[in-house]
Image (cartoon, rainbow, N blue to C red; front, side, top):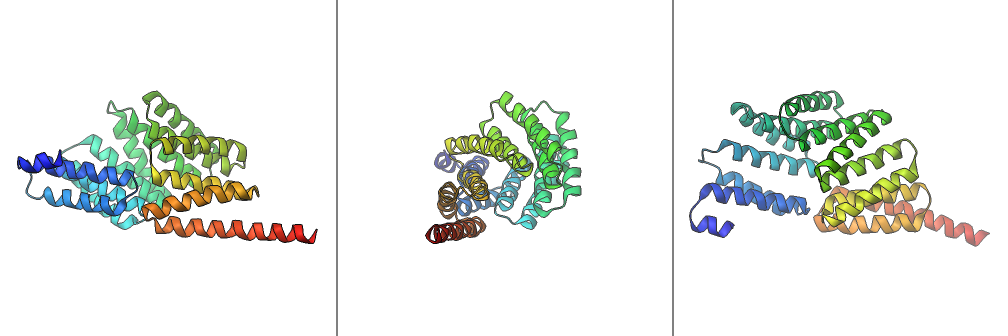
Amino acid sequence: ALGLARLFEDDLEVARMLRRVGVVHMVEGDYDESLARLQESLAAHQGLTDKTERAHVLNNIGDLHRLRGSPEQALRNFHESLQIHESTDNLAGIGSILNNIGLVNIQQGNYVAAMENLQKAGALQAKLNDRSEPARVLNNIGMVYLAQGDHSKALENFQQTLAAFEANGDRSGIAGALQNIGDAYQAQGETTKALGALERSLAIFEELDQEPETAITLTVIGKLHLAQNTLAAAHASLARALTLFESIGDKNGIASTLLQIGVVHKKQALHAKGLELA
C-alpha cells in the first residue's frame, strides 16, 4: 500500500501509511524502527493541509518517547499535538492527548497534575460516544490511586475498567486492566490473587504478540515468585523477560531484570550452601 501511494504521488496517503507502519513497529517493541518511520511521516506532512493527521503523528511520537522512558520528549510532542487539536476544536483529540499527558505525569511522580489532566480527559470523553477511551482514562486514574497508596480505590477503578474492556471486546485493554489488578492485589499483599490476574494478563499479551507488555508482566511475575522464594519459577520468568527486553533493545528493562536475576542467583547460592551445612 505504501508503494502504491508513492507510485501515484499521493503525499497524504504516504504520510498516513508511514505512521501506520511506525505504530506497528512500536506495538512490536521495535522502537528505533518505529521512531524512524514516524519521523519520516512527520516530515512528509510538511506542506500538507491536514493538521489532524500531523497531530496524530506527534501523539504517536510522544507515546513512543513515553514508552522509552523519555518524559520530557514525550511531553514536548504531546503539547504540540494538543495545540493542533485545540486549534481545530477536536474534542476527541484533546481528550486523548490529555490522557497521554496524564500518563507521563504519573511516570514523573506528579500525581496532582496527572489527576487533573485525566479528569479533564474523562469529562471531555463523557461528551463523546466513545466507549473505549473513557475506560482507558478510568484505568489511568486507578494508576494514580495505586501510586498514592490508595489500593482499594485503585482496585475498584481497575475492575470497572476490566468490565468496560470486556464489554467492548478490547483484548489489549483487558490484558492491561488485568495487569493493573495484579499490581493492586500485590500492593495489598494478596499474592495468590495477584499471580492469577497477572498470568491471565500474560496469556493475552503473548496471544497479541505484544513483546514490551509481555516482558513487563513476566518481570512482575518473577518478582512475586522471588518474594515467595519460589526461585526456579522466579528465574524462569525473569529469564524470559530478559530475552524479550534484549530483543526490543530496552536498556532499562535489561538492567532491572539482570539485577533481579542476580538476586535469584544469590538466594539460590545461599540455599545450596544451607543444604551443604545441613
